Length: 61
Image 1 (cartoon, one colour):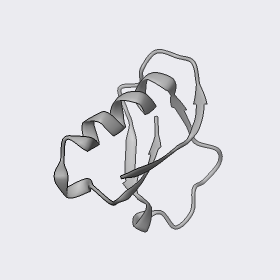
Image 2 (cartoon, one colour):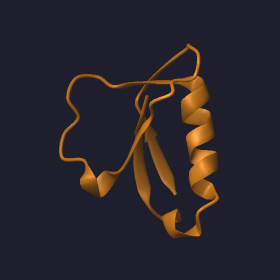
Image 3 (tube, one colour):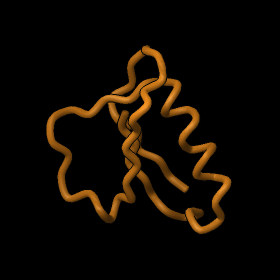
């Protein structure tokens, strides 16, 4: 699994996190941000699902 985090910043974890398969991303409007906390936990959550192995994801919060 490969993850591409958005621009990282220090803040409390966001309640809303966007996770998209890279095949579904045709463009990224603006400059999405993600908190260090969200970017750290989302890949761990994805890793618990074997069907996501070998896939690529964009993560923004």
